[in-house]
Length: 482
Ligand SMILES: *Cc1c(COP(=O)(O)O)cnc(C)c1O
Image 1 (cartoon, rainbow, N blue to C red):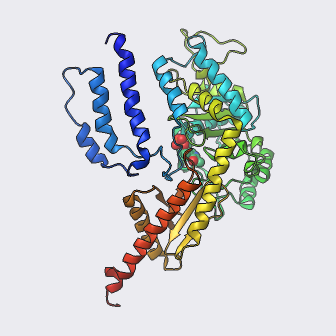
Image 2: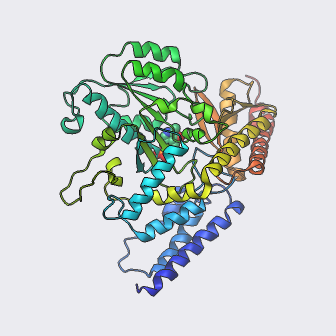
Image 3: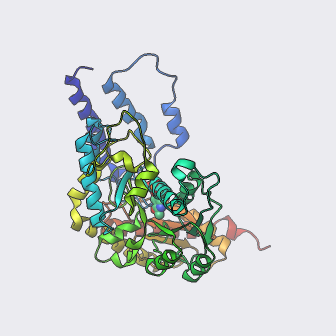
């Protein structure tokens, strides 16, 4: 490819991308084809000969688009995922085009510097200890992993064991306390670290997923030796926060390392209205959060934040003779993450914070919480719909056919979710909460405003009414009584 065609190729890709984003609100929310359908479109033998760059990009757009989910639009309420803001995407394109291997500050000064500044901004916005170190990782899953690796090393070091050098064989046991409603990926992180996902002390939680303080105190009292306590800011179904002010001092008394999974909930700290929910969370030792959720950066972007920089570095250290050494005040991105070569994630984070500003972030988070509250209110006003949690943040759970026997309500809830997804006006998914089937609604995409929330609530009510109608006249009620 000659140099003149690079610009043309990039513009072509940009046109495909812009068309996709511009038409997102006219699209059916679910992909038009299934995974198997997409597989059939992509499947072909290894190409023997090459194809021109332009044709490859056109072909990719044609093949991929029917299988894309409208996750970046204003009518997406599924899971808890951000909307890949265009400013972050544009910064990320340049990141790819610049092609910087962001492991080392000497090789790529701009990537390392933007990341260092973005790290300081994050600590300021989230109001966490300013001397903490920040690793830019792929998401909260890996952020949890990195923070817990630092935790494992630090608590074992205190009893004279060097886990980074000696591994876990023969090490004193580490007790891990975790709430019953912690995110599945925290259990994965513990699995990767040799701490096991079943070898844990699980603490009872309340109706909205918060760790029970008396149960926690009781378990904490039994512990002697190295321990790690895992708390949560923002439960994925309810948005609930553990009571940091009550729990952290108890954990401190037993000398535990306190880690907080705050993938999205930690951003409550960045708003005047919601800040109180995460009061005292800064008393922890480490925090995992995401850029690709509430900060709306494109994938993939998460942050591993650790109070004790030395523990963080020790856990992630990579020593190789060909890597230039780093000196006082020089920060290498690779010191704080498992990877050496990786994309320069700091650019997109820097761009999003620069674009939204402290006020823009606060306004967006508060708007999402307000919209979630309005939607929940509208839905609870409808016969047969129950909202199962107080909307403290941006997350809530809905159950359909409330008042009927549990199994029937489970079925009606499942049918309403399927109906909503088939209608395609907006998207929300399902979950099981404490044994009951629920619809989960998450308000976190930057495009969602009051109007989008109203439209979505109307669509959910319409789906429920259609299901209720069918249930009343359908084969089941026609069945003779047995
Ligand atoms: C999303 C989420 C995770 C996992 O984060 P990824 O970005 O998907 O890796 C972990 N914990 C909580 C509470 C989450 O919401």
